[in-house]
Image 1: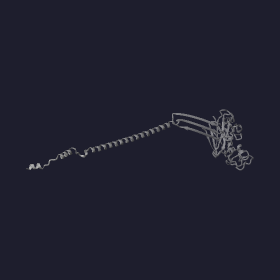
Image 2: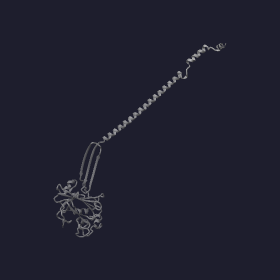
Image 3: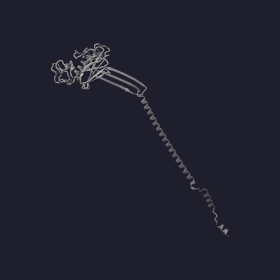
Image 4: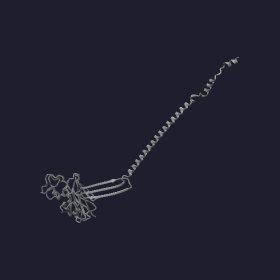
Length: 353
């Protein structure tokens, strides 16, 4: 009975229910396996890949653009370097040493040395040396201004103070001759009569000791002097800085001082020259009175005096300059003459071999 009861109590599912259950058992799957979910994942992957490709493309483009800019900069620097190299190479790379020397020798003792040197130093293997030397002798035809002479006696105030004569009395010793005239003639303006200037205590003799062509002259005792044996020149420096130079040179043409001077200074006329005789020497003054050219009797030598003024361009000691020139004597085996040409009775031995 119990068995039957159980069988009776069991319910037999209906055909629709069985069909429903069977259908559910076959088609119902987890949501993660639904086709709609897989489609969303695929789309996301595609979008991600597209974004990645875009990033790669843009990154690569930026990288290529940056490399292109760097190459351009390097090319520019290379071109600039090449340009600089070309600039250094093509800078007229010839070493031209153009030395134009204009030496203007004014025979009035003003020497203007104008040296114009153009030197272009550009590195190159080609060296061109061009040397042009022009020597022009320009003579000052106008005498320079004489410094102050208060009493108009032919001695400047500086010369009067140096000698000790009066700057307000033209004839200090009242012997009838002006002070300037006495000094130029070789007489002492402080002592009336025939007192020689060479015997005054403010005057001294100066004698050279060259190998040859020695001479003697008178100068002011307080003035400095130098005997330059290496070049055969004497330099006397005044208290105010002017320099009187004396030197000799060969008279290779054997001409007189006048002809030599006119030949070297074509702009000068004979009427502009003053002749001078010093013992047995003959010569001339330059037109401005600042240079004297003497020749010896056999015309083998020139003896040249040059008075070089300072920047003030004033002739401060004209009378004393003439006195020095006229006291000049060659040192030979003959008596040394007084200023007026009379023999002093003493002889000076020549040091010429």
